[in-house]
Length: 182
Image (cartoon, rainbow, N blue to C red):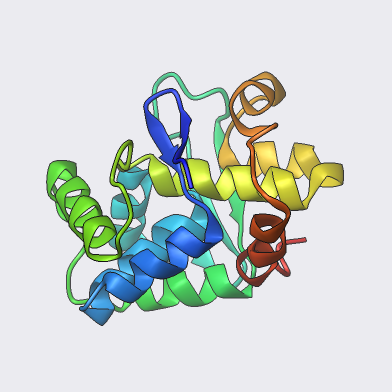
């Protein structure tokens, strides 16, 4: 199946996520990948959370204004049970995400190739864009919650995350990952 690209960034299908997770040999790296996926956090935000763990509560992450260009003074990232588990596992890891995101991109590409997936467009933004795309697909009546949780405006989300060409099978498989988010 042809890769889904938004700009130069890859949006993964649920089957591709499953294959990549299966290709990651070290449990600690699976935890890092899943935490990035289930939170939709920016890479730098998740690195920050590792150092500021008090901002994680059972079903949410509080992110104070992080980027100078950020539209919001703070945001709360909503987590489903899978997301809460992924963050808990990530925070108990011995090490944070690599300081150099290029290392993470190299890991992602290696895992994709091991899984038999074309690595085109797979970057640090892939998990974030994948998660938001899945949420707007599965929860079309909850779009404001999705946008606010991800720190986007409605216009940004409409421009980048709606109308992704997911198959009906993709949509069925998303339920495993997104279930319980609302």
